[in-house]
Amino acid sequence: MDFFTKDKKSAFEAKEIAQWIAFGPVIFQTARVLRNSGILDSIEKSGSGGLSHEEIAEKVKLSIYSVRVLLESGLGTGLVLVNNKRYTLGKTGYFILHDPLTKINMDFVHDVNYKGLYYLDESIKTGKPVGLKVFGEWDTIYEGLSELPAPVQKSWFEFDHYFSDDAFPIVLPLVYKDSAKNILDIGGNTGKWAIASSNFSPDIHITIMDLPGQLNVARKKIEELGLHDRVSFLPVNILDEQVKIPTGFDAIWMSQFLDCFSEAEIVSILKRCYDALDENGQVIIMEPFWDRQKFEVGAFCLQQISVYFTALANGNSQMYSAETFFKCIEQAGLDIVEQTNHIGLSQTLLKCKKRKQ
Image (tube, rainbow, N blue to C red; front, side, top):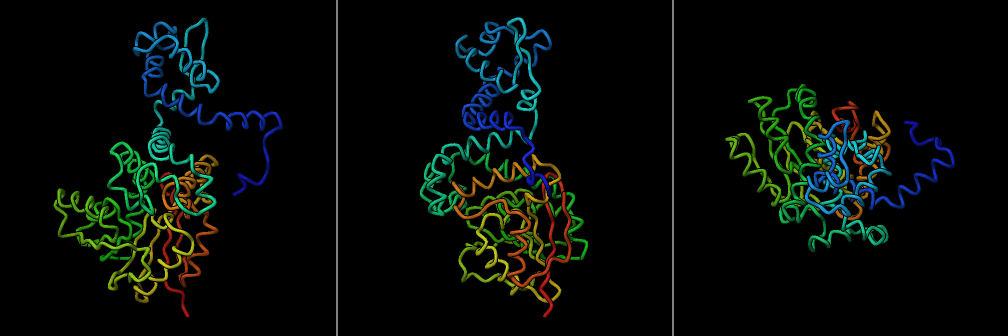
């Protein structure tokens, strides 16, 4: 990947971007309010004729002052254009309104991250998710996930699922092509992989291993779907190094799970996976690595998401580069026997086996 090997901007362009960074929180909140207030939608519906301040204010039931302040900020970011005092939608405004990835990321940043990121400097110094205190007194966000305010929970799960849902139909045949039937799903969260696997083949049985709060959500959904005889549940805290991973499984599956842990914790989990598998067993991992992306913007998004882990999730993990992550796999005594990049939006699928002695 050579996205980040050269400085491609002129000095003038770099200084301009520096101003965008300096006003980043202002730009973000203005765009969000323009979207949520209905202003961008009203302008889009007006077509090429556009709308005046007065017409927009009437449509969205805000003062002319409020509309003017928001729109003038939006001019600088290309959300809207103005000609003859009438506003039309810019290309960036269109994507703020309609692009699913942009909506998911914007809601995640605002609802989950915004207040907690104020404490990023403390998290960087301490290795603790200091920003999490805006929601509650937990060591990690995962312990309090089931207790987060409903809007926060909604944005968190929509974000989490968005980056894996489009990959599941692609990876299901890849995961099960080796005739694995009995799968341990570590960090199964709300049970989406278990449900997808159950629907993929009637011969597959999944055991979800996760924190009790997450398992309660998964169990409810799976019972509603009538899949309770196909899915089992094992409540544990995987960070407890005394917790052994049970044996007898054809494969251990972890999807967007290991990025929730530090490098040392990843190695610990993988070593316990190593101990649980026989010589034919596999550890199958799906993760988005920022240095395995097709496009620079994909790498950019993952690099920024890392800061959520630092400030709010746990203080010591990130969206890893493949280079860093593969070292953890090697330290655990595993070899990557199959690698598939560019799955869905951002994922890489790894199949690992015990290293031959």
